[in-house]
Every structure is written in C-alpha cells, then in structure tokens.
Length: 351
Image (cartoon, rainbow, N blue to C red):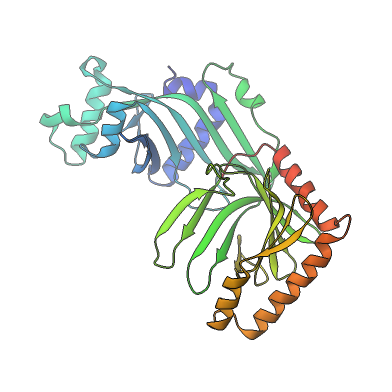
C-alpha cells in the first residue's frame, strides 16, 4: 500500500508533473474504473489533495463510485489539452481505500469538501469517501525537444524511478487522419521517426487507439492495425513527399506492405490529412503485387466522388508503385521494413 505522500517520496518527478497538470486544468482528471460487466468506464473527476492523501471525490450516487465499491482498482490520467503534451502529462493506477469514521480528521475534511459544494453534511454516509493507494505511475514530457517517459512501480527502490526512464526519442507526436468520400474518417496517433527522400515516417506502437467516424457521425474506437483476434499491432506509415498514396508496414501482417491510394498527404500543424481514394495496393509475403477494392474505386468514380483528374493520378500511382515494389530488391520495401524495426526497438508506450 503506497499512499500519495509515500508516492511523492518514491517518485517525486512523476508526482510533480501530476500536481502541476492537476492544478493547471482546475483539478480535472479522467478516472478509469471497471463496470460490472467487466468493460472499462471513463469519467471526468476532480480529485483533491487532503492531508497528504489523494482523495477521489465527486457526485454521490454516480456509477463510477459504484464501480469502486465493487472493484477498488482504478487508473487516473491528467487532462491533456495539447496534442504535443508540451506541458507534460501523468497517469496513476492502483486501488482505492475507503475512509471510515476511524480516520478522524481526514474524514472530517472530506465531509467539509462535500459541504462546501452544497451537499447536506448530515447525509455524509452517502458521500463517496475514497483515497488512492498508488501501485504504478508514469509521466510523459518534452525535454530539449525530445520525448521523455518516466515510469515507477510500487516496491522498487527510490532510485528506480530514474533508472526506469526510457531512452528519449523524437518528441514529435502527430495525428494521421484519413478522410473517406463522401463522409466518414479514421484517425490515429504516432511518433515521428524522421523524414528522408521518401517522406515522413510515423511509428505507432501496438495497442494504440484508432478512432473511426461513420458517415452518420457515430464514432467507434479499436486498436490500430488489429489482427483477426482484434489485437492491435505496431506499424509504421510513410507519408510521401507529393505521392498519391500512404503506405503501411504492419508487424506480423500477411502483407509486407498495404497502401492507400490517396490524395497527397498534407500537414496542418501536427495533423497529417489525406483523402482515401479506395484503391488499395499491397505486396504479399511471396512478393506478389495486388490491388484490392477496384470495384469500390470504379463506383466512386461513376458517382462523382472521385473526379477525372484524381482518377488518372490514382491509376498512374498504382502503375508506379507496381514498378517500384516488384523490383528485386525494392528499396522502398526495405526502407519500410527497416523503419518498422527501428520503431519497435524504441519500446514506446501506446498512444
């Protein structure tokens, strides 16, 4: 059991980032709990620091507190408003501990907090009275324009928080957004590995989140590059300089590379955007070049979703990629395989 005060002693760097971000957002954090059916629940929360404890306080009678009564495990993430995490962010996880009457001054202070926002103090037995025992934590920050990740686990010696700091990597976090015609989109985040003559290489670790928005506006999330068991895999994306495509190399995929024929990717701030033009070339493990969804491409052209100029450029790009990817050896294929290995070696946290 590690109280907040003990956690601050063992992992002061992570604790400082958590406190700073907690204060900067008006105490706002996001709490993860486990629902009765086993699925996770995410809820906004304004935790308070009370007598050297981190108290998880909030509206009585809400589902998140029912979750904690049933299963004390939780995760707490500072609210992030900057996609580049220029001010850093931090997350904690552990188990909550209920504060009963024997806690004396701590319980009295929690009752005061509830009373100050309008709750009847005579109904204090209904107030959620939880404090956090921290099991693990991590923080992320930009230092000298590089990304630094620090982790800590309960039971480790106090200097382990320093040794657990992972090798700094390229700080640039970007979002890749694919637009579907006439409506719908998909997006995910990645770490920029660098740029070369091919274009910009963006690596996304396994178990990162992909968000898809259907034409009716309904949004769903899953893991990036998931396999048949719906488990996400690491991948690297090439956003070429002026090319009408976006190429994806996925770890342990049945294809060496999968490609979206697309409008040339364009960068706006820290977001790369492109329009998917339906045609999907690939190279399989045997070196065979193929193209999926040619029927969808033809329908999109017939219905005017893809204009005549874009149609010609798309077909020209398919022919060009066929030449470039079937030569032995293919420099482009090897570059993607190398970049994927480079990203995996960095042991980056999912996004």
